Amino acid sequence: MGDARKAGVVGYPVNHSLSPRLHNYWIRQYNINASYEAFPVEPDKLEDFLRKLPESGFAGVNLTIPHKEAAIKFLDEVNDFARWIGAVNTVIVRDGVLIGKNTDAYGFIQNLISGNRQLTGKDVLVMGAGGAARAVCISLLGAQYKVTIANRTKERAEALAASLDNSDIKVIRWDELENSLSETSLLVNTTSLGMKGQQPLELSLDNLPQESVVTDIVYNPLVTPLLAMAAKRGNPVVDGLGMLLYQAQMSFYEWFGIKPEVTNDLREHVLQGLR
Ligand code: NAP
Image: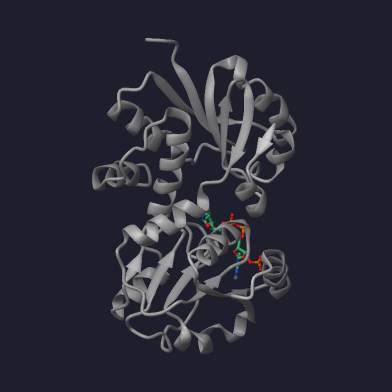
């Protein structure tokens, strides 16, 4: 067997990351000679850290906050999709070259599909217009959905919609959200509201048809107040953990050439890291 290959997640801070738990599960399961660690790297040290990856035996790394956008300028190649999203979450070392890709959009749509929830229509209401919303909107538009964005800061939603330049995307004001729910077949939360330590998302779902699907990309807690409220009134729900698992699946494939399985055992193992 050759030398062990390294991989990891690079962020600042990064000690909260579930990625080591997740990738090391697959490394053991598929008996790969590799390791995956969390690397706290300050923003002004990122370029140096990335440049040393080839000589340090890395297959690649994941990038998380605050490096996803900043890393683009330090990489040798960035694929068109990651450029469109404006963020790299996966760096691959190939023949000494650093290649940047983005697997978040894949993670979002794959989680939705794997949740096996039937959508009654094509109208999606996305709450939030931050970094994650961009990947979510791109994946939805790619799957031919019609996207309406509502964000607390409307200008940010308008800038996002304008940059995507697609006739299937429009913006409404945050205070128009509840009235628009009657037209919504999929409601997506991409804001940080509902996350552990943050306020819950205050929203009445009274206008939302009962068969409309509700999904939250926040996964800590797994059942956010939004998902709990939706499930209570009978709406089908999809939690956000799968997005994390599926974006990781594609990163793992890029580094090690194996597309690892996303199973209930893996979910349980990763969830233990949240408890
Ligand atoms: P971000 O770029 O900081 O964006 C935060 C979003 O939340 C913005 O739209 C912001 O609105 C909104 N927001 C914050 N506080 C608010 C409030 N009090 N009222 C209304 N809106 C508020 O963050 P991000 O990177 O997009 O991440 C958002 C969430 O997604 C985080 O919880 C993150 O953990 C989660 N996430 C999950 C996955 C996954 O794999 N499941 C992947 C990526 C991210 P303004 O524009 O008005 O500030």
